[in-house]
Image: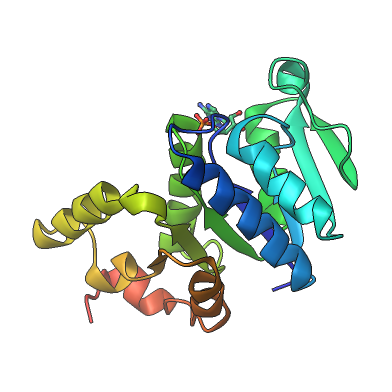
Length: 193
Ligand code: AMP
């Protein structure tokens, strides 16, 4: 992987560990010469990811819609800040610029970005690894919901396992590097094993 998009909260969360994890992920990607693509804001965990990567000498591309440029306080120290017109264009651009996806704790915006990539992967529209950093057990509830989707017959187990989860940034990246895309035949038939 040469370029990873990071989805995360525009807030900091109530525990310092969230911000620390975001900064660490940014720095770790930079140290491994992986370019960071993200939403272009300097606030919340988004800002922490960018700061971590920039401090470690990495390349960071922000993609921000014009109407959020002031509201979200665009980061002015990035390698490149791309301004787009709509939220849809923003997600498409981030998708085009990345070959892997990491999701950190965040709110509805983060979930929307993650789930679009999960559903596109499920339909075979991309085969990028998608990693979820489970800081502080933040995503335990999402994992439980996903397991319940499998139990209740709304999600194939094989597809559910394509969401890579770890509490440790380094382990998460290793899982993503080793990821083998779900074969399209399994996607279309919702095969479970
Ligand atoms: P949040 O996780 O809600 O703090 O949002 C994180 C990122 O998602 C920010 O860059 C927001 O601009 C973006 N975002 C917020 N709401 C939406 C939405 N409805 N659709 C797509 N992205 C969103």
